[in-house]
Amino acid sequence: MGRRNEHTREELREIALQAAEHLVADHGLAGLSTRKVVGRIGYTVGSLYMVFRNLDDLIAQMNERTLEALQARLIAAIAGQPPAAAIRALAQAYITFALAETHRWLAIYQHRMPEGQPLPESFTAKVTGMFELVQQQLALLCPRRSPGEITLAARALWSGVHGICILGFDQKLEMAGGPPIQEVARSLLDHYLVGFTQP
Image (cartoon, rainbow, N blue to C red; front, side, top):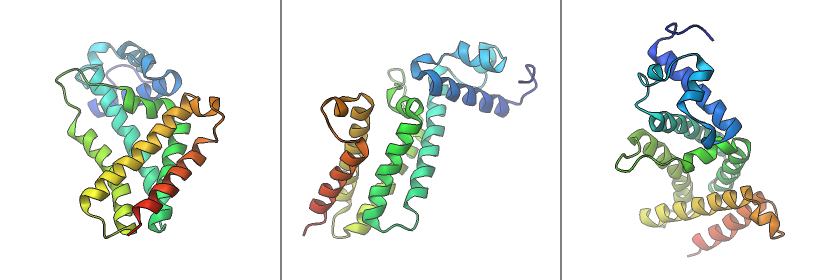
């Protein structure tokens, strides 16, 4: 790492976010602090606060990068797939990412902004973009359904897949003698899509 003051503001932002990502990947969100970040990059806490408003701002920006990486995986997974297969591919790609990047993935849902401080609009837009990937495929699969029904179905499906992931990480499914989370997710999707496409 270079000496202090050798980086532009944007470069400092980038190396700070990379340091935060490594800390979270290794230790979870609870292992992240401004002092640990600056300890890795050779800057002061004051220098960090010239780039980020506070730790919550750093975490929100870090989580946006995780969402971007996740969305790229989801988009790649559905390339050339017909709608039903694409929906299953989205779920499997989501689970694969969650298993491979568990701490970073969990940080998206664990972090809470201080009371009265909303999430950045850019963060909300990225979350909406992921739901839209599901909605687009559901609309192609069942064009007779109304936009409201499509939106609700996308939320229901993704909430189910997300819940399966959480239970899988807590090992509650295995403790109950259940199958792997990928198989549970396939069952959820298969049965939901059969019902959703019925006249």
